[in-house]
Amino acid sequence: MDIRRSIQYQLDQLTDKQAATYCRIINAEPMTAKELAAWWEDWSWDGLAQLLTVRLDAESDADLGGPGSGNWGHAGRPGKRGGSAPTKHETERSRAGGD
Image (cartoon, rainbow, N blue to C red):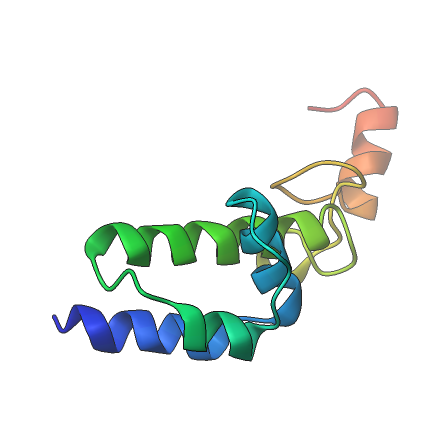
């Protein structure tokens, strides 16, 4: 696996919001995604791990419980990370005392 190519791909996919999150984490002046990509110097496995972490964290925080954030595109659980809101059928069954 070519680590430089993998990191460059992640940098190309970076959004401005994710770049701002990364800058805040490392206590750097805010940068746009393009500025961060030009500035990037860590072409190691650690650098790749940092990019992946920031991309995933920023993505999941932005969509915390929002529409389509649940499993397989189902409604998310407002204010929660992971899982899906119960379906109408599951809610009705729960109210009726079913499992």
